[in-house]
Length: 313
Image 1 (cartoon, rainbow, N blue to C red):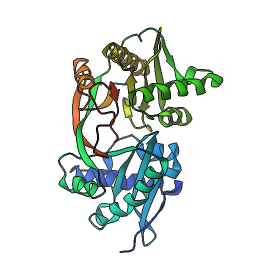
Image 2 (spheres, rainbow, N blue to C red; image 1 turned 135 degrees about the vertical axis):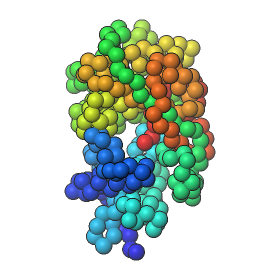
Image 3 (cartoon, helix red, strand yellow; image 1 turned 180 degrees about the vertical axis):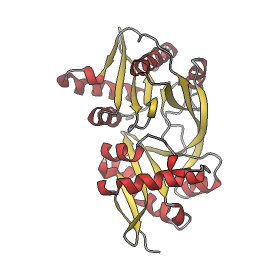
């Protein structure tokens, strides 16, 4: 079979979304695989965030798979990587990996990775061929949203005057750089604003930025109907990190409550045990587990001192 890997075009997105749902829904044994991911729209929102970071695989002129990559400064990851079940096991995923890894290298990412099924030898073996190593389980968690006022000194990116927004983005970049050198999630902040998918919440204290979170909210975002999803959230490192993290979570839940959504979703690496335990103490429960695979085989920012929420899905 001749496989052509090329940039994913906007006209490909409906078929790419169909394959994404069919592939994961089938793998998970769903009665109706196309119900996988519900009203969340992961493929389109990530493509719009950076169309140059998406690849499609076709055979005989038909799209049969896709892969999307994400650059967070010095950190890069990819996914979802999906192949139509009819073409599974025929080398399509490996062909999609080649330009994806070349792009991560071209971005200059010094720490790269992915999220996959922890109990799937097929997936683990595929990515180990390319030098990725399973490091930490990732807990995908959620809790019921309870009405609550936001903590003091909370601001919202969407309500910030346009001329002040670049300085906010830069403040967030400096913040994440303190957690891991070069880590920069401005892509997520800008994508939320450009696509109107949710909100970036910022919490302040007398020393400056205490924490921030990029939240997807509702249908058409990565959250889906009736939910807010913390795509990335972080508290300022240091001796008061637990308190900062708590206030950030209060702000996220208060914002979710103001929208009337029912569930607040967050992912956290179990390499960040204190952050995981704090989420559990606040009522978050584990919905599923996956594993993050890293290249090189290093911790990155998945360590106990990092009060960070993300999941690389």
